[in-house]
Length: 295
Image (cartoon, rainbow, N blue to C red; front, side, top):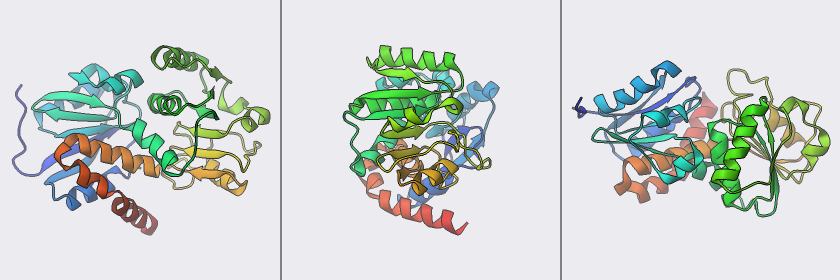
């Protein structure tokens, strides 16, 4: 079936479940307005059984592109025509470009994750990291850590089988073997926590609306030499980040990662505007923070 061309405003979208919490439509539509691009970015909650149909809808309805979020970053791979090398290595796609009905997949989570650390001068070379979770976003996280010469990684996940799969992937795709499974997050011991410099939560535990949750036990304590990076951005400060900040750790939420992965996505969809897109970063961050704070 031939792809349709939008008659007026062109569609862009976000596919995931849940998506009600997402700030992406807010800041992406603001960016499109600043760029004077006649497109509208909408969020669509879909089921696993609808992923194939959603990808076909991108073609049929003439979407220029779409983002993919939890839990479909890996399952969409089966329904794309092309996947770039980085996304292929990571094994997860969060950005799709539709070029006349041909769907190409990219991973912008990788750059979105690592740049906030680099921009703050947080050095990873020779450091130890604790990573919580083994989902699609975790592979982008591990790729960024290995690319920046992390020394050792402790991996926590509820299911050992999924952790083992991730460790095998890390050895095969990243040629990195200094990663160990340390059990489920609920079993983490204080000694292990104190042995790392960077703690990253890549799970949705603590995300709106279940904001009372935290991936690590409240009996554990952080240190002022540690950086705690929670990829969740709604709420602004999760229970884990609140505890870490109170105990002197450097804390970072997923808000800047969210904005950056969105800007990298826009650059894939509108490559001729790339320089202008990234020049808007500070303006978009400030706008989104202000709207969220007032809501």
